[in-house]
Amino acid sequence: MTEAISVRGVSKRYRLYHERNQSLKATVLRGRRAKYEEFWALRDVSLEVPAGSTFALIGENGSGKTTLLKCMAKILRPDGGTLESRGKISALLELGAGFHPELSGRDNVYLNGSILGLSKKEIRHRFDDIVGFAGLEHFIDSPVKNYSSGMYVRLGFSVAINVDPDILLVDEVLAVGDIEFQRRCIEQLVDLKAKGKTIVIVTHSLDSVRNLCDSAALLEGGKLRQVGPATEVIDEYIGDSHPDRVADGQFGARWGTGEGTIDKIELLDADGAPARLVRTGDPVTFRLHYSTRQPVAEPVFGIALYHIDGVYLCGPNTRDAGLVPDRIDGPGVVDLRIDRLLLLPGTYDAGATLCDPTLSHVYDQRHRVLRFDVEHGEPREEFGLVSLGGVWEGTVVGRAPEVEPRPT
Image (cartoon, rainbow, N blue to C red; front, side, top):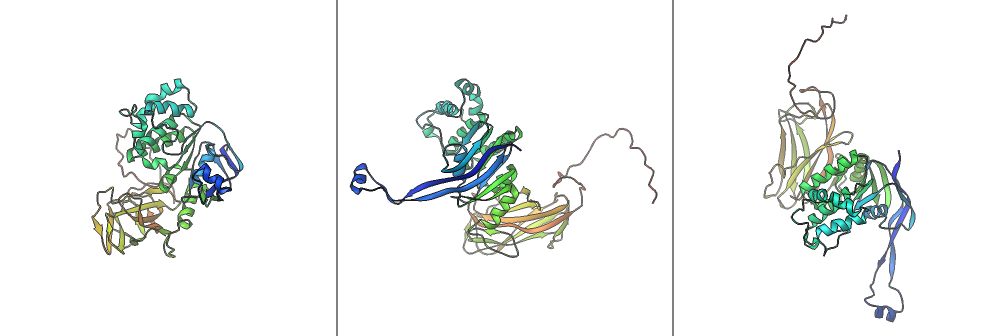
């Protein structure tokens, strides 16, 4: 497969100054340069991004993800190694990058589009689509210095995708947008992927990586730790990379701040008994046992379901269901009751999360801690992972030919 981006032995260093010269006079009086130490943001990183793939860069803050993305965009020049790309690159790397705060949104569309290689005629032809996708029709002639962070991102992303790039580089800034805009962004990324475009994403949203990306690279301390199929890399990251995870031989990886904890996850059958084998169409309940070390305000509980091969199936939570109590204090249980389990036969894993209403502060997260099997039930279907639970209807014309029974 042809590579859209080739990274070979790339290293990048920064100077970290321990003191600052306040003026030229201070520098002269010192008679020496300010002291600094070298910080290597990237060290000998090599990887290939296949053309037409969606590729994620993941890792902890400070691991070198954004630095590598800027090197790919040719914003930064590596101090070692080589980096080659094939095709037109469009990048959305920083909030407001390429925008002039004193100019209007309209002027900045033309300015940013020109920076990304579009002619004035091309920008004029695409202008309505750019503004429409960003949803800024009423604000396009206002100075962007008056825009909110979400408006900045919407306009920047809209310009970036309308350049019709061969390679799109996107940093975590998409997390600034509201839920509706994030949904439209994901749809746009899926469309670009279907058109054979190459997409490189830096993100902390592992769910987005599972759903969107073919491959991923895990960076740690500026070094490439692992590169491969997205699901495998994510499992490696979750299992070993969280500094606050709690080792538990009985269960999977675990991390969180610990004010509240998920102590146990159970799958209950129709009679309320714990089960590890259920059937398609059965009524089941996922029960979360929790406790707190101190009162937790507005807790949100969530369940995550995965197929055994790592495919992320769904993640219902109590916030989306409108069930967020004022607080919890002490032990308790929360149930997710499912009238008909529409998973098809196979092996599945369940995890659980206790977090705040923003879903960003995690008190406790248990990753794939409960494994269970599903066997044939009703509806009886063979293909895929889930059933839609539908009923086939229609007018049958003619009769199926009769088949003589085979001799036994």
